[in-house]
Image 1 (cartoon, rainbow over the protein chains, first blue to last red):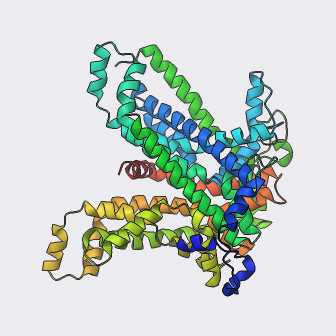
Image 2: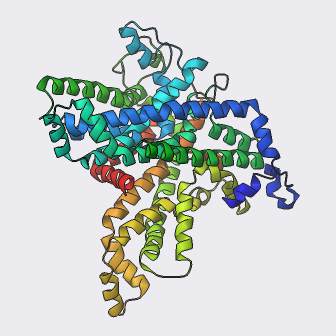
Length: 264
Length: 274
């Protein structure tokens, strides 16, 4: 980790592997170069888009599924839990291949199903304004199961007699959820949002397989940019980008801690 | 019950639709892998394969070397899992039960590295592995993952919960540290080791960025690397082949998951709650 910090201040390139002493320290040049590169700025915006929309969506779906399974139903709970969790254990590369096929404009399953209800589905992965939503949709599908399992465990700790007392006092289901369940679940929600956020900040496989960062760089993530620069042999530069990602991870984590703590 | 009967039925309906939506891609993957290229491109798509065949799989293992990639994935995952079970439990034991100089510092290092994402370290790690001459070798794929900070933390937390008297009893009877660890601690760690083993195997099987960087020719590809490169390279439009490849990657994991699902889900829940 310290080595990566050092490398990020140098102009290390692939040929320097054999001659480590020819590396020059270039100070902050890598960082200013990154911030001056429009493709990198685009990658930052894309990553922000993915995180800001993707994390709340994933959390919302996970929480809804957990609440439904916890109190709504009594039978078949295990079946639903198993089914919803299944995508989590699968390789992102493999499911991305499958999703690319599902999202095909003319013969994909998703547009076919949309056609049944009279909606003319878009060119999901080929249209720059739909490409990112497609990726977010797939990421939510793949990841909400983890949050759901952790929320389910958290919901077990919410005392049911509080709900009963509130119900006797005439509180609606929504009021009880809002004023009893949510406050007690705050630490769990914090945990899930931090881990999901850290994962989403680094998203890589999804654009690699689905779109290769396109169309028009609309899905190029910061991790993908790092990998590309690494592929070009710009190791020092790639290391500095990865350091920016690391700092962002730390900052986003700190912000989430702040937000969820202060609402108390 | 606080919910109405009608509401419950409605909820079952919504959940069933959601379940179908979540599981459908996998069914579509398996069904699609049995279809021909022509059939895969029909609009509207067909549900059941018109003439189901294993052609795509035969191609995968004869024309492409998926057998070799499969072996690589298995070797790497098994070695990484074995390494983690051994080293994480040993380190976890040391951090939980022994007193030695630098223990606090070691724990701080573990906790800090726990937070660092893989994308941050892969460049200097690659330089390290390259200097050791391990690029494009299987050891290059598994050596950096033989011990994980997450595993050390998990094992430490679990071993902290074991009674210290057992160790003292062992010491009184004259057992050395190694013997205490192997004979007393390890047998009690069953549930934690099972969780760690499952999560590690899964993580290694699905790992992508590192093998993508280190494996540079076909003989060291793991399954995800091979599938990703084929799907973005010259075979990018051969969906039958790609869906069959995805099935080969996903199916073993699905089977293991179905068998061990209880352990899986409990493992995830415990890592979340701590």
